[in-house]
Length: 178
Image (tube, rainbow, N blue to C red; front, side, top):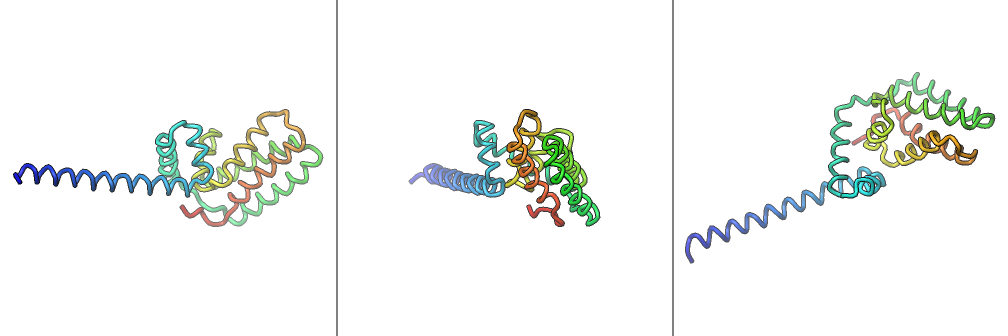
């Protein structure tokens, strides 16, 4: 066989091996994102209309999160926030709509104190989705109920329950392990 045939065969083998490595790395990354973001992965794929775009978005979220200085709450702050939450729950009976708004404000305050940027809801949800992917959909649902303004008492109660899920995770004493 001629030398050029051996070179062509070797080049083809190298291309096949590189393609296999690239495919395996891509599958591994997809699996990591799917496992790390849970239901948020599927929601992002659906919203973006493309798995590739969604995976890029989720990777960008992780990079952004790495740049943030998210810290645990001091014990005094944690206790103060927990006391405020109990007051909000008690107030719900008399004024559900006001209690829901206060829960929203309290969650944002806890996020701010932990080190999350709090200017824009969508960015807050994206940032929180990295550390708390299992409850970010609750946060979105609670925010929607709060902003609608015409929710009935049961919907407002559900909104408060949704805020509570994120609130409990934000009160953790150690940063999320990511």
